[in-house]
Image 1 (tube, helix red, strand yellow):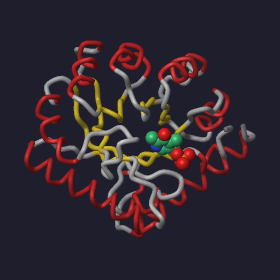
Image 2: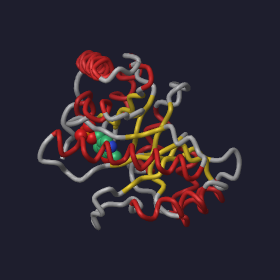
Image 3: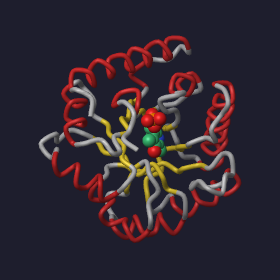
Length: 229
Ligand SMILES: *Cc1c(COP(=O)(O)O)cnc(C)c1O
């Protein structure tokens, strides 16, 4: 892992870029939550970011996250986001490990989450597969409304999340981010839910995502450096 002071310096730089992107789009920087994607990073990397002010961490693998969280259990005001795919048979450990699941993509999974945590309703985002890519999880744009209808009594739906298809350019990514925002606006109108959260943007494109309305950006490498492969 990078040295703790380097992680702190990179975190400051990402924060500054968030401030500038917010300013360019007439938004307040404190509307945007920086979720650090800490998959494959050791607990000490999380600790270094925490001491530099980070409070939100995103993890992809349930067991890795549970073990890591246990090692930094003293950081009691950190919030853990599940940003990787969740299988129904892992929901119990997931609801104990995470405060928010960003990857709800089926009615069956909503049932399993509600079964593992009936009350209070688990906060979730619906993961949208905007490009309709078969290799990715997430619900297709055409199926979201029926998912919201069946899941809203079982989980607390806060908004939408997406990992758009790899774009050749920042403009390509921008189109997908704008698409997610419009989808949210339409869905909020038809369902009556606020759906105020939009989780979109990573190391390569988080500033564009902020310009298009992201309320959560998920950033890994810009803060922690390249992941070991
Ligand atoms: C790894 C990951 C990120 C962060 O990616 P970087 O390119 O390292 O910023 C964001 N979102 C999800 C779902 C991820 O798996």
